[in-house]
Amino acid sequence: MDLNLLPLLLAVAEERNFRAAADRLGVTRSAVSQGVRRLEDGLGIQLVMRTTRSVRLTEAGARLVDSLRGPMAAVQGALEAREEAPRGRLRLAVTSIAHDFLSGPLLARFAEAYPQVTLDVTVTDDEFDIVAHGYDAGVRLGEVIEQDMIAVLVSGPQREVAAASPAYLARRGAPAHPRDLLDHRCIGWRPAPDTAPWRWEFVEEGRPFDVMVNPQITTNDLTLMLRLALADGGITFAPWDCLSAHVRSGALVPLLEEYLPPFPGFSLYFPQRQNMAPKLRALIDHIRAARA
Picture (cartoon, rainbow, N blue to C red):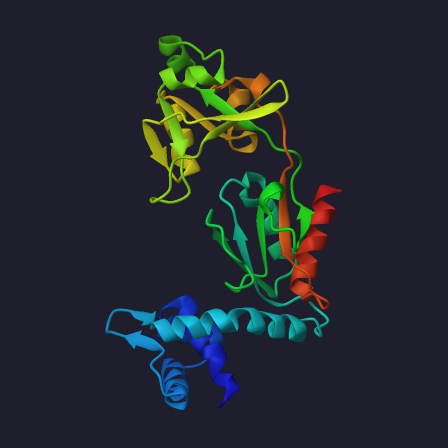
């Protein structure tokens, strides 16, 4: 079997389009299509379903791709580690609440410093194995990172904030205790459509507890939560970094602060690698220099 055909399949699986896969690999569309067909013929099984509008993996194709992602990423990392200058595509999976990391300046300055590195940032709150899905690194809260990963801090301590607009509080009053939130209109967050709204977590006299606020409005978009709170839509709950500018301006009022102590912040995390790719090492050094 021609092992050079395997990157073609991975590109098709990730791009879900022969043309996009060809552009990414710098070859023609027909080369990608014919290469995948040769791979299927060699294995004697269909790997890709093709229609005039879409491309998707068969069940066998999905199993093969899942088994290839980790080893292919390791091979790519070993090859890139031999290069003197950082180059290539750097794939990151970043939680949507890592506000400072996603705010722009950190990544913009990195792109300027390393023009031969192409940043591919996926903003997602799904929990998955970044290695199996072909990512070089991820950014999440330190407390939820797997123990077998290496973590580098990208932020200071974080704190959740419950907040509402002055106009809303003038109409409804401010809750004195987290349990009072059950009598308020709340704007909640959920990571995906088929999951329950996030429970709001608090600490009282050193003991953690949570409140299922039964939000009237629920979304997976922090920006929408913020806009609704600014529009007098109710009380929302989000990391301080996401709300701080509006709290400082007086557009939002923080609530229940005595029940919301700080906790460890966000970290860039990645698997232990003996030969780390220069592109990932460059990002780590860039983050450390920015925090110095």
